[in-house]
Amino acid sequence: MLLVIGIFACFMAFFALTVSRFSLTAKEVEVVHTIFGFPFMRQRVPLEKMEELTDGVDPQMRARALLVASDETTIVWAHRGTAEEIAWFRDALLRAAAAQKDW
Image (cartoon, rainbow, N blue to C red; front, side):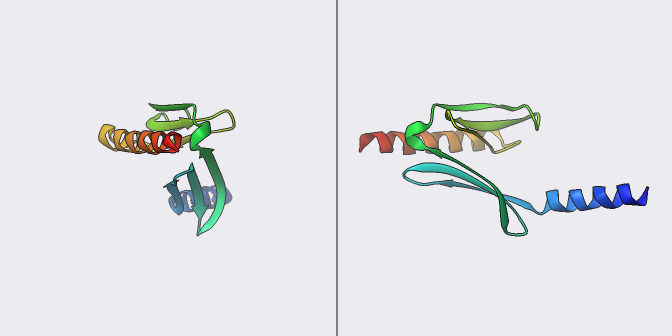
């Protein structure tokens, strides 16, 4: 029983120390998830390959989120964000994608 509680405590500590960073550059959207500063998952979507940008629901977290999709991957961002926060991220991405196409 103590082993189960110890494993659960470690899992919760890792989950609590996980940091996600959302980056928007002139060419791509990137999300990097880190634990103790070490990246363990990185997702990128080039703006020219972005196919869908929706204010939707993440089925795993069962929470409202911003979904950035391409053929290769889907980035899920802003879990449990307010409608205003998700709209701000969506508008910033749309402006960046429009600026990319103007070149």
